Structure formats: structure tokens, C-alpha cells
Image (cartoon, rainbow, N blue to C red; front, side):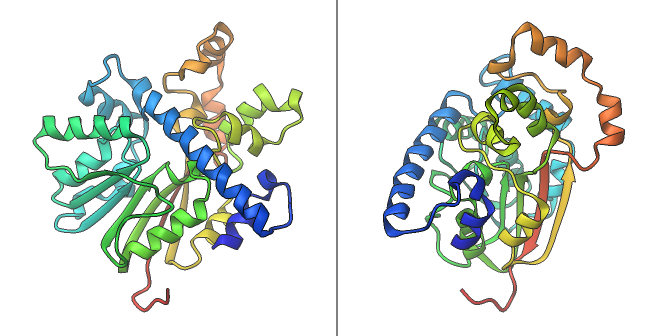
Length: 297
């Protein structure tokens, strides 16, 4: 899996030779990147832009599921009663609370302490008993074969080593357990828009623009074939590409896109044409797979 990680995103590493010194340097850079990622999500927990008030959790959930109506079908909250579920990257806890409401024995982790605080507050207000922990998706603090479901929606592509995140998800799943993971897709309309805004004049690739400009620093995107390589240890892998709110510019812009030119773009963007002609350019890849009943570590 480590080899896959280096190969999948050679565009970032620049094709350098892998040596012990290089790996040590990469580990130092990865730790610094994780700190920057945590700082980003502490300052703006996922979904904050949807809120008029910081802790209006009902408004947050309503807007999330209005913009992304495919989440419930993908996650399958309603069929999780009695199952052990691990959510990697709980954010403000909208999905996590639904696992608990459905009767799952759900544990949630996040790198962001602020996100965990908001998720805990949401669960407390709803009268739900939460099991939330600050942890790193690349080094999960759980035993092998511990969970029936590992769910991670739009999180692992932010981690420096996405392949290791997926390997860890596989490790903690019980044989026959289900992984449900959303990763960002390449190419996408979102990536192309970032490239038009930033990449052309800097002579950067689309992926490099996403890496530097989409949400927290170090965000990666994956082709379908790269996803299949990352999920090679899983059985029955399925990949579904869907539009995201960002692709069609239907959500509220983040703080960095509030100027008058962006407001004009939000008004004039040809959403109808894009929906008809851009079916393969959605940002979200909804990925499912099963851990084999007979598997080798």
C-alpha cells in the first residue's frame, strides 16, 4: 500500500528516489501538514459555511442533506442497528448522530478538536451517548477486526497518506465488514475551476491547484483506476461518481470566495448545461467495498 501511495501522487513528490533520508524528510513534512490540516478545520469545521449561527445544528443538517441527498443511501444509516461503526472524520457530527439514532454502536474520530467539540455538543443536545476521540486516520487506536462498518465521508483525501488511511480502515474492519468512503475525483469541475482561477498563470496542473487551494492544504484527488488500486484488498468494490455542491456552485461560498467577481460567477454559471454535458466530472466518488471473510494481513 505504501508503494501505491507514492505512485498515485507522484505529481506532488516530483518522481524523487525513495531513500531513508527522503522518507524521514517526508515524515517530518507529513507531521507539519497534519498540524496545518487540523488548524484549518479547527478554524472552519466542515459545514460551518451553512450556518447563520455557529451551533444551529438543525440548520446544518438540513442544508447538508439538501445539498447532498445521496448521503443517506450511501451510508445506509437505517440498517446499522446493533452494528459497531467507526466514522473517520466526524466533522460537526451530522452523520455521526444519525448512526447513533439508528441504534449503531458508533465511535467517531477526528483530527480537529474544535470539530469534536461541536459534534459532542450536537449529541448532548439530542440526548445521544457519544464515543468521540481525537485520533489520526493513518494510525487508528483500535484493535484489528473491531468494526462492522468503517465510514469516512470526504476526509481521507486530506490526510498526507491516503493509502495508509484505507489500509487502516481495512485492518480494523471485521471479516465481511463494509467500508464506505468518499474521496475526491480527478478530473472534476471543481478542479478545473480552481485551475482556471489559479493554475494557468502559475503553470500548475489541475491536481496541484486542488492540492494547494481546495479546503485544507494537501487535498488530493483520485481517478477511478487509482481508487481501485487503493481498494485492491477489498472485495466487491463499487465506485459511483456524483456531483458535489461545489461542482455546480449551489452552496454558499467559503470565506476566500466572497468578492464581486465570484458573486457574478455564482449567478452566471451554466448549471443546466453542466448537468447535461459534464456527467463524468463530478467531484465526489462514493466507494464501497467488503473485507474478505478469509483475508491475510
